[in-house]
Image (cartoon, rainbow, N blue to C red; front, top):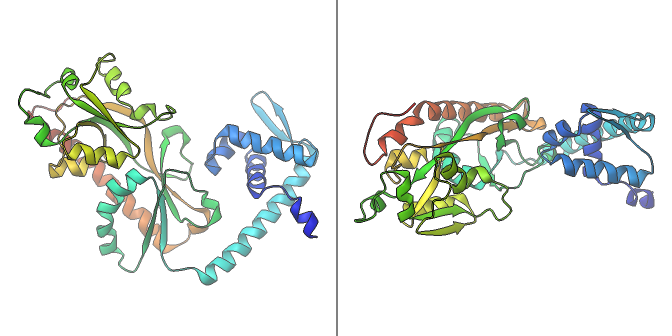
Length: 325
């Protein structure tokens, strides 16, 4: 038996096959599993090569299971269901009370953690464990109960709760604006200042790049006085608060800092992102009261943030004026 076990395909390959066979779409299966479509396609190809049989019939804009694929899918679906049930039974008997939240480092440090006290006041009996990591976590494994994902609007899972979108605009320390000889009253003045960048060597996040904001605001060729790059976005914001340069502020992540006066928005021109923040509940956690309470709290906090989203920007401008629409 142990020799046969060693020949079993990877569990990730089987999970990808189950999702693709159930949805009959590599794209939708990849979105459900939070992997890329190309990665899932390679997994399926590797599984077919290991089995020595085609599992899918691939046609233009259509995907179907072969006869062998249908039989294998029935067995694998049953196997994965039994494995998940057995895992939950064992995990439930030893589970530490609490709610595990997965989200990005920037969202955790700039938005969730500063607000967590209000959830504790509402639900003092619920412990929240925050796992901040910019890598996607597989929610089907059972280690995480809720995830807040930063996704393109069209890629959000069907059951996800949309919290809010995002827009970018320059932000800086109030002290920076008071420096003599270096005005910052119009976008062209950015040429006199150091720009703070989120390092993106592979170009995978162009929507968070200064070039996108500058191009959207008619200044594609602007050359700043200097540049500083940081690996994490919260480091970019800490550098801005410290007066080291001008950052591309992500509202609502920096809205509380604008309200507090730690940062100011010297002009109102902004760049709208096509991405947003979504709360996703893990399959095993849908019926839990603490998870429902946490998602309800997230929804309420996000709704308040949306209502307040323009106020901190307007109040933080160096020279107050009527808000542009």
